[in-house]
Amino acid sequence: MKSTTSNQSDSTLSNIVDTTVFKIESKTYQNQSEVELWKLFRSGDEGAFIAIYQTYIDILYNFGIQHCKDEELVKDCLQDFFIYLREKRSGLAEATSIKFYLMKSFRRKLLDYLKKYRKRLAVRLKYQQENLFKFEISEETKIINRQFNSMQVEALNKAINKLTSKEREAIYLYFFSNFSYKEISEIQGYTHISSARRLIYKALDQLRITLKLAVFFICYLFFD
Image: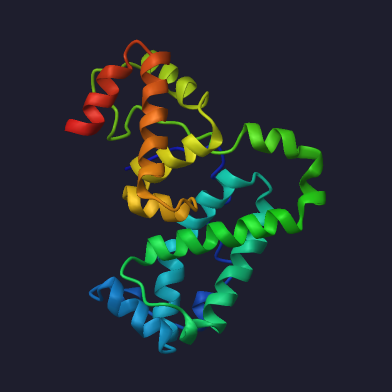
């Protein structure tokens, strides 16, 4: 699914790792399963590390910028995150979904970063809280019924951004990143899967209340 976030101007972070140094062709790893690729990475294969980096760096950046609008802080956190992964690779847990493992781990590290640099962000703290996960849905997005016109899409976006940041994050993870309720519950730090399910249902119910046309949107999401 394709989403349009509020800030994607500098989402290619090739300056963090100079992949040309390794002279690795990504296609070498295209036929590897995620389990095999992660196993290669953990065993010290630099090509596997680069393949993982190139695949997920922009996804993690766009996810991170939803949590914090300070682009430089997100970049610094990403740099430290990948350095940590590379240095500690042999001790990392096995993973069946690399994307889930990285999103969960990076979210935790980013939240620690935000606590560490809270003074740096203090001036914009109120703005930060109000504008987390201010993503927008475009008319081309697959989850939008073709019968929706531009005004209805705009109304839907306004309704989404009236949700709490936690609800918007859950919507983002479920509909745009295709994570399951179980994965979302782990990413957001819930003990029970039902917590993530209730959060998403609550958000959708709020959309239904806010938008007269939301019933078509929700039916399309669940039955397409």
